[in-house]
Image 1 (spheres, rainbow, N blue to C red):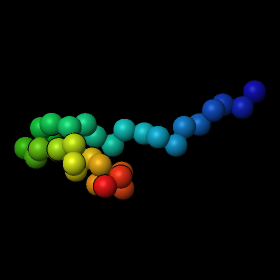
Image 2 (cartoon, one colour):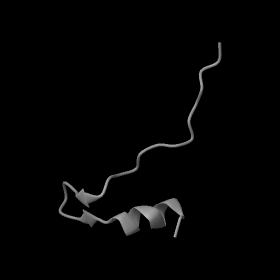
Image 3 (cartoon, rainbow, N blue to C red):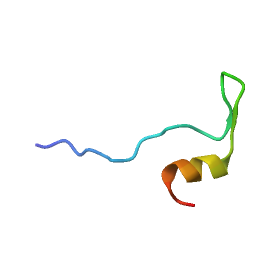
Length: 35
């Protein structure tokens, strides 16, 4: 039986990062090409 493969994966979440940056929901939408 073939395993289903998803093309979606998490690249990040909104909020503070471990190196001091802040990721906004707008940044995530731009990375995804939605905006």
